[in-house]
Length: 131
Image (tube, rainbow, N blue to C red; front, top):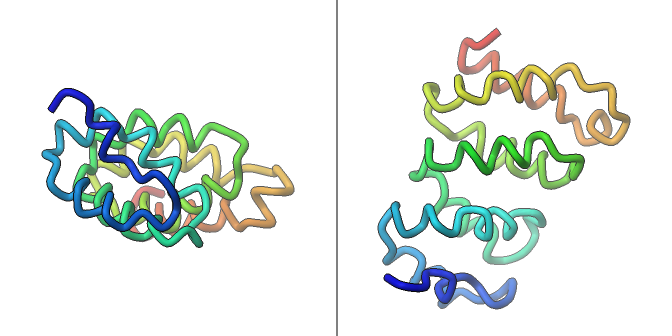
């Protein structure tokens, strides 16, 4: 597949793109992981939950971009990634995000605290025996 970017949603209600994305192989989806993750910045967008379901099976392939997101300052995007994606990854994969989860669990950033990011990270680590 030459240009997998043509499979990306064109707007927040582009359900046809979801079917097209489901037809792609993991190695094809890997090439557009950053763009797919952008669609979960706002979990209220209709395509967001469906994109999450496409992303979860990619598991370890998500690690490089998840590390970037978990180290950024976009607290709402971090919260969505943690709550809807990270917590559903395999335990082995989560271990590779341990540094980011520990860092966020100790955050004193008021926005992170308001969005309960430290607490979500502690819960993820506890659930997966990472403490």
